[in-house]
Image 1 (cartoon, rainbow, N blue to C red):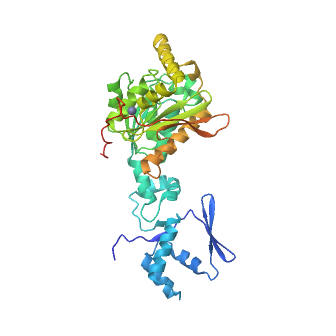
Image 2 (cartoon, rainbow, N blue to C red):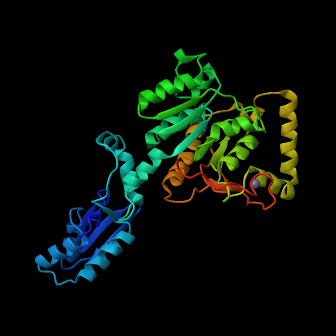
Image 3 (tube, rainbow, N blue to C red):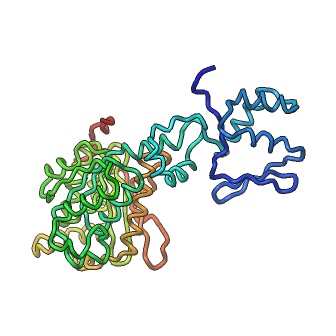
Length: 379
Ligand SMILES: [Zn+2]
């Protein structure tokens, strides 16, 4: 018998109850009810504890006097697996005891997406090995960095050139009053390595001032989380170009005075920022003119922020981080495509409902992404 034959186990997070002549299994948000007048299903479910192969489950059912064929048992196991009830009790964890304990509650979540062929440990390892760069250590960057490390992402580059100011402390939870005037990147490194000393943290105290500098900080990364907004109206173009050139996925957006908005750009799959701008120029003259006006204003005044950017409210910063973090999990593990792939999703503070704001496609004539290089293979 091959060593790697799965040993099906009903996921520990799914409670099984007998209610009269039915067996009830509680899945997230729904309840599976199985008719079980003679207790056969309960007996079968009881044997799915991760210690037996399918052949051994059949053997033990036969030994208990059940008249059932091997094919019927295999088919019942497959049906339970399709219903999302099973994981493989023989799956290799590939994680040491420390990490298994540290990420125990993550594994409880990832179990939702495991089955007999994909283990929760494999999903956690994908998160651990995901190569991410976080651009900007302000409000979003603060929350994002802590949460990425909490997720178990261990290969992180951070980029920031700023120093800690008192007005940052309504939301930038990486810093303390005693840090005022210090470089954010230094403080962030101290805090994060205290939070998880095993993180491979690559710190870059860099201001992104041109397209080549953008490329230098995203090169070699699978995912770019951009929370930088200066220089206004330019930096997003440079980062977009750099991501296409590096074959890296980009998630960016921002927090306005009363809403969050974000999108995901995957080179070769979705339209890029340049495609989006071309779409707007063709279909929405007003927005295109407004963007041109804002660029003119930013160039003329050299103001670091638009008037509407003066607000930065903790509840929205956290909301933005939560939405983007969920996209990180989808991308790193491959359990689902990112919800914001090729479209701008927004949530207003006032009603809290996520909705699609804009959607755009790849343009075959795009000067930036028409001929992207293939995404990098894992290093
Ligand atoms: Zn494009």
